[in-house]
Structure formats: C-alpha cells, structure tokens
Image (cartoon, rainbow, N blue to C red):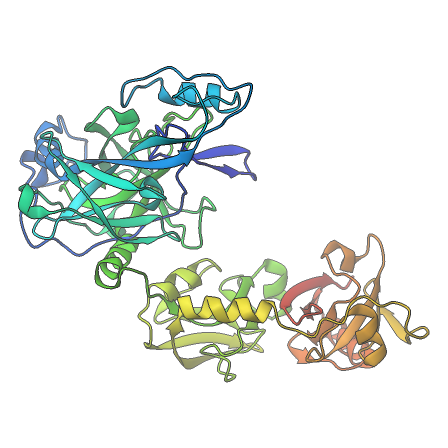
Length: 524
C-alpha cells in the first residue's frame, strides 16, 4: 500500500504519491534534494522552451515531447514473509501493473491469504517514477520511499528498454535516492535542474510520471503555493501544485516551461488516495546539494551548529524586549558541539545565519544543513536585548546526532525516592512552589548532579505555571536571562520585571536530566 502521512492538526491525509501499487510492500516517506547539471545529452524541448507563456501555453505538446525520454519508470521487487494459518485465502493472480492490485492487497492482507494461496515468502513489486540527470554516467534521481528495502531495482525507459539499477545513495531526511544504470547499454537523455527560487505562485508547471503504473503521463498546472511545511521531515519546504500527481508519480520531475526540473514530486493530500489538486514537490534548490553529496560520498554531509532551538512566540519576544517575534530561541547547547565553547548560549535568539535571515525557527535547520561542514560562518544573535555577531565553525550533523543521542542518555538518574527526610523550605510565585536545590531535593525528584537553579516542588492547578506545562521536579535556571540560585533570587527577579512593566516572565527550565527549554508565564 502507499504510505500515508496524517496531518493531525487538520485531520487530512498526506499520501506519499507513491512508489505504490505495492503488492503488499510499503515505501517510507521523506523529502528530496538535487544533482549537478548533466554533462551529456540533455533533453531539448522545442517550441515552449524558448520563453514561458504568462497566459498559459496553447499546447505543451512540443515541450512534453522533448522531455518524455528523460523521465523513467522505477520498478522494484522485494521478498516479504507471507501470511499463513487456517484462515488463509488465496489471492487472485493478476497481471503485472494491474490497477486492481492495491484493491486485492487491502482486501486479503487481513484475511491471512497471499497470492500463492499459502504462507511463506512471496515476491512483491512496487512502481514509481524518476528522471535522468547525467546521461554519460547513467545517473537517475527518484524518491527514497520508491526504492526503500528493495532487493532489485529496474529502470524502464519510454522506448521500452529496461536496465538494472544499482543504488548510489539515499537520504531519508529529504526522501531522495540516487541510482545508476549502465549508460553503455542504452543511449540516455538527461534533464537539468532549474532555479526553483525563481518560480512564483501562478507560474505554469508540468509533471511527468508513472501514475498507477500506466507509464509516461503528462499533467499540467500551476504553482499554488511555496514553502509548505507538511510535517514530513526537518527540512520541509515544499512547492505546492495543482498539476495532477497520483500514486506512482513519486520521484518524478516537476518542470517549468523551459523544460527544467524545478521540483521532485513526492506527496499529495487526499482523502481517497487520488489527486484532488494538492500535490507537493521538493524544490530543486533544496534537492541539488543532496544529490551532489550522494553522488560524491554515497551519503549526506550536512552542517551542524550544535544547538537545541524553539520558536520565538509573541510572549517570548515581549519578555526579551524584542519588537517582533522572529528568529530561533536557543534552548540548549549540545556538549562537544561547535558552540559548546560559549560562543552561543542558551537564551540567545538567532536572527541571521551566514547572511540569511531567520524569520522563524524552521529556517535555521535548513540553512545550517545546506552549509558545508567546516565552514566558518557569521551568526547574528540577540543576547539580553543586544544584537551581536559571532563566528562559528560548523561541525557535521551526522556526528552531532551521535553526540546528542549520548547526551540524552546521560545525566545522574537518581530515581524518585520520596522517602528521604522532611519538608523542603519553599516560596510561592506564579502558581508554583519553589525550593532550594540541595541533596535532599535532588534525591526526591531524581535531579542530575550537574543541574543547578531553583527546583519547582509543586504547581497549582489552573495556575499560569500549569497552563505552560511546568511540572514539579523541573528546575528554574534563569529568569529573563539572569541566573537564579535561590527562591529569593526568583522572587526578586519577578518583582523587578513587574516594576519594569513586563507582562510576561521568560523562564529557562531544566529537566531532571538537564535538558533545557524556555517558557513564558503571565505575571498578572
């Protein structure tokens, strides 16, 4: 079956525009990224390639004719364990690529049957799309979920030729895969990536792919929106189009009217699994770097800053004295990371990275990931109301993920022994009871030895603190970017903020293992 992403916020289904027609297998979803411009035979679309037609082309026949040869069908197969048991029902034999395949897969999968009428292993097939980006080297780009877990991959060309493909590399974070076929066995035609940043809402686009295993199919539409985040991965920045994209279109190209690839078709929103005019394509500008790295290294090598971040809400911006809520708030620093030397600190707001504005939190991970490992970059931060620029040398994300994983498992876990001693002297503020962080409270709440600050011992129901999800056992380490070490420090700092006319207090909280986060609390 075609894998699906559920957008719980809207209760709509995002279906990976599948490598589907899966006869019982599945494909994993993600995003994508791009490749270098091909050096040999490049598709040369006629007529419409000279100049895009603002009013819409009278016909795209010449454009499509010059591009179809570079778009391929991807066919994969894998062996999966069949189902067996007394309720097993034989599945009808169907011709390869039958449009009824998915129906019978759904019908029989919960009835214990397989297409051979018994248990054991069976061969399943999946179909998707792709396109050639280098004719001399035989390089083909598709989605990772199209070829995920495949035992065999075949590339089918528009003239009927089929070639075996080997996997060069994949990137699950962007749902991109790079394949290689033997270019000596068949004369290939390639297409090149265009500049997706130049595409505007309303521009005409063309999608070519292999929907439902039907083979080369052309659809036309416009760019409906840009910069879409559908919560499918850390670098979501999709182009939305109303050009029909269906199951089997995954991995296929989205062209501009110059015949350049400006997107890789990846996902759709659909209650039924078919196109309703809401499709998503990975922008070529994002894809290009990933494809380059997969070709060169067989893996991605992304830049890494080594910070944990959270959004700058209106409340946080107000509490920090910022005029607008923009940037990414640094909630924590990864030990051993590029900024573990104090260059960037918790509480800093990153508003610009290497010359690129960080308007919202999600802008930062993309900008950092697209930067070369080892590059020295300027990072503009706001610290205690003052804007300043710091220099940072980037690490490698793949190494950083290991450090972050180790850090999550660290910390002096001391359990939740609540039988040690008497009551802790506390104060009350903003719906919280707070106390000194000493051996007794560390033991009571299981707080790691390297966490410092003032412990929250109780949170009143329906209080401002409860609204923000603050829990007993968390530790207040800073208020309005000033360290606190005792309940008196907390009371004094809150009092000072009220005197300044502040409506909210910005608290930096540490979990019992030391993970940091920021919350704002109303002080009215």
